[in-house]
Image (cartoon, rainbow, N blue to C red; front, side, top):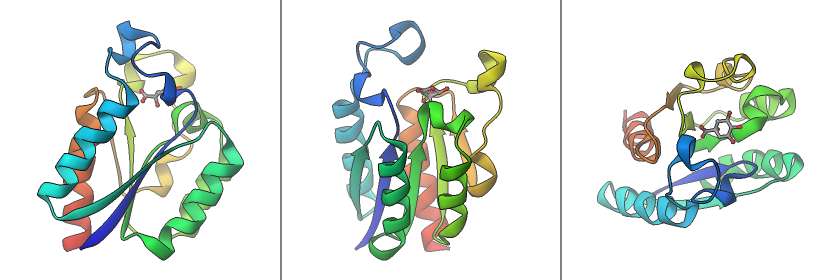
Length: 145
Ligand code: DQA
């Protein structure tokens, strides 16, 4: 069974109560259980992680290659600021997908630029929690092909 990891960045632990008009009222725990169900259907083992700390996220990315065949990341606000996360993503060679709950291109100017996107195979954004489900399907096909 192949293993994949989903890494969630800062403030995503607050989903469900956070800016519900933008992110909906689904909690991160619920997204986790939906993601685990989707992974099971594809015979993938899933680790679902969250950190508010940039350095910790970098450690998780650096370690991902040893244990996992694919990585999905929602870098949250670090998407728009972190060259360090970009470099960590560039440093590992497993397939990588960036996800966002909201459509970052419909939002404030400062959210329209993803610094991290150039290091991943593709981005899925704007589908709410379904962005995660679609990303699991996409990473599965990248791993299998
Ligand atoms: C987000 C979009 C980011 O701009 C924001 O900082 C987040 C969540 C999303 O999933 O839509 O925290 O990554």
